[in-house]
Image (cartoon, rainbow, N blue to C red):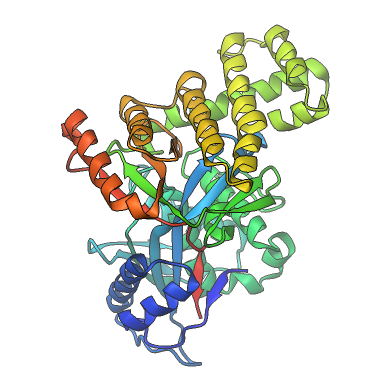
Length: 464
C-alpha cells in the first residue's frame, strides 16, 4: 500500500541512501537532505542501522504537498490539482515490548513520552498533539494495536507554511506506529482500508476527527479539513501534477509538469498555524460550506452531502443552487444569506470553472492560458474566500512581474506560502529577485521567510 524503496543497506550511509532516493524521484540536493535526516533519526534511536531479516527497524520519507489549484474544495466534494513536494519528514521506528511511545525530534533534541492508549489527551498547539492524536485514534479503531515504539524524526519542510506539515506529521506517525503494530495485517484494517487513496481518506479523519465507515472518530487535532493533503502525500507521482476529486476520494487525471519548469516556493514567514487561536479562521470556510449544504438539503428535501453533490443534482446548473441558497430559511443559524452565497460562488469559481481550464491549458502546453487561470484562482481567494493577507497577495503579484509563468498562494491561507512556476534555467536568479523585493517590502519577515525550489516529487516512501 505504501510506495517502497528497495534499500537493505545501512540507513546511516548518507551517500548510498541519497543515491537511491534520486532514483525514486528526488533531486540530488533534496535527496542528500533526506539522507542526512535519516542518519540523524536512526542514530538517535541507537539501534543497529544495517538491517537483516531479524531487524525491527523501519523508516519512511513523507513529503509535504503543493496545492497547485483547489483552494478549500476537497471537503466540499470538489477536486484539486496537486504535487508532492521534495521537502518533508523522515521517520525511523523500532517497536517496544511495552505500550509506551517515545518520540524524539532528532533535529531539535526534544522528546515526548506517552502511553499507547485510547484516552490520551493531547496538548493543542504543540507538535506532540499529532503523534498523540494518531496513537489515540489507532488504539480506538484497532484495539489489538497496543505495542509502543521508539520513534525519531527530522524534517526539512517549513512548519506551518501551507505545505501541509501537519498532515505530513499525521501520515508519518501513523506509518511508524502501524508498522510497529502490524496494522496492515489486522482484519479490521484490511476490511476498511484497501488502497492508498482510502488510507489517505482514513488519515484525514484522524486529523479532522470524523468517522471513517465503522472506524469511529474522535476529536482529531481540531481542524475541519478534507483529505486533499493526505492524498497528495500518499498518491502523487514524481514529475506529475495529479488531479483528485473527493468525498469519496478518487483519481481524475495526471498531467506532466512541463520539463522546462520547476516550482519556486516562497514561505512568507507568516505562520499559517491550524491550531490554537488561528483554528477558527481556518475552519470558517469549512463551516460556511457545511451550513450551505444543510440549508440546501432542508430546502429541497434531498440528501446531497455537500455542495458538489448539490450542483451535480442540478446537472451542473449552479444558478439553481444559488437561487435556493439565496431564498431558503436559515433556521436561526448565525450566518447571512450573503455569506453562504459568497462561499458558494468561490467553490463554483475554483472548482467548476478555473480548474478545468487550467488542466486543459497544461495538457496543451499553453503556459499563458495556465497563468491566466491561476491568476483568477488567486483573485478569487482574495475577493471571495477571504483567506489571503498582504504578504501572500504581494508575493503572487511580484512573482508574475518577475517572469513566473504562474503563481498562487496555497494551503489553508491566513499566512503560509506562494508557489511560482519558473523556467529551470532562471530559477536561481528568480529566487534572488523575489527574495530581495519581499525583504524590502516586508523587512519584518526577512529572517523567518524562506525561498527555495522544488520539483514534483514522489509520494511517501517506505525503506524496505
